[in-house]
Amino acid sequence: MLSKAMIDKMNDQIKNELYSAYLYLSMCAYFEDKDLPGFAHWMKIQAGEEQEHAMKFFEYLTDRGARVSLQAIDQPPAEFETPTAVFEETLAHEKKVTALIHSLYELAVSEKDYASQEFLNWFVKEQVEEEKNASAILATLKMTGDKGSALVMLDRELGKRDE
Image (tube, rainbow, N blue to C red; front, top):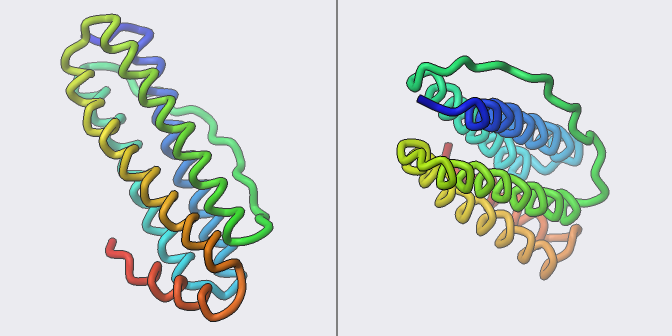
């Protein structure tokens, strides 16, 4: 049986994952408005992944007999300065999510909740990938800049991301 503290933190994480999806949809809208369909496509897929993450927590809680309690989701920012600024924010956000996952894992360890540790292992690994992907795109943007043919080429490359 899950502790109240674990249930509460996992319910918080559902909200955090859904906020991530909301944030990435807002970034998608920004890129659509800037005529960068590849960047928009990348963000739309990212938003979908975050919704899947939220549902993993939802299903885990229900599988363990816990009550899911959905919370209000904050409005994400709608305006961004540049594509580079978007990916700086993306990386910062993923680092924040990593810290939240680590905090959940620490709670599971302190409570000797082995099932939750096993469940959270997937998220620990996933966050390594999330940070790596955001870092790689950010590094490319910093090398190429936010305008010109290099941005167009990167936009085409990001548009090839599989769902």
